[in-house]
Every structure is written in structure tokens, then in C-alpha cells.
Length: 164
Image (cartoon, rainbow, N blue to C red; front, side, top):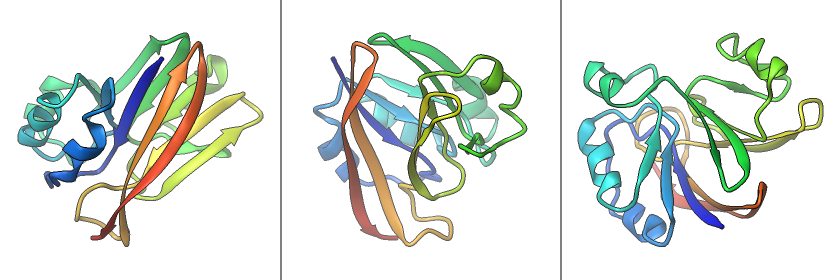
């Protein structure tokens, strides 16, 4: 079993509570718009990080992390990207690949809107952790934690960090 800490859209903002909420996780995943290498490095000082770059990320971050990550963990097929859309409205960046070979878990950021949806058509769980940073139109800053065990997802927690 792995415990995952998930965030997105930090836009170079650091909150010391990331440590508090992620210290007991096995991995931290960042779904793009990291904003600075410092944020990435500070997350890496807590736990191993899997990340993708977002549309606001510069060349330093794009050199450090890929645009998409597709990987297997604890028996689950995961695809993480920044601009991915959500069930019923996937981004053209992931169509037709998501229909041709859907993952079990599809993670995206970008919208700053927290969403956890099950796509019955593709048989996948979609998670957008909302935005953990200060920049954007969102009102609440959020993180997500969950577990993966033998291809199953559980113990999903939404953590509100308060108003931006």
C-alpha cells in the first residue's frame, strides 16, 4: 500500500503545512504549474516526488519534469498531466489516447477546481486536487491525500488550507 499526497497549481507559493500533510505519505505528486524549482526541491526534501509541468512553468521546470507521466504503482495504471480536462470534457491534449488506452487513475490540474469524479464510460477515477497556491480565481486552497493498494484507491481526504 502507498499513501499519496497530491497537489497542483502552487504557482511558486510555499506553505509550511505541505510538510505537515505530506510527511506521512510515501510519495508526493504535483499536477503542474509548480512555478519554481524551489517548490519542487522543497517537496523533494519531504518525500519522493512525481510531477508534471504546467502551462506557466518555465524552461527550468520543463527540463526537470515531463509534460505527462504514465506509470504503474501498487497495481494501478496512472496518468498525470496538467491540462487534461475531466470526464465528459477531456482536453484535446489527451484525446484520443485516453479513449484508446484509459488509465485506472487520471490526474490533472490547471482548472484550480477540486474534482473527484468516476468516469463510468472509461472505468477510471479522475482527481483534480484544486489549487494549493495563492494565484488564481479559486477561493480555497486544497490538497488531496489517498491510498493505492492492489490497484484500488481508498482513504481519500480533501484538505482545505484556507482562503487564498
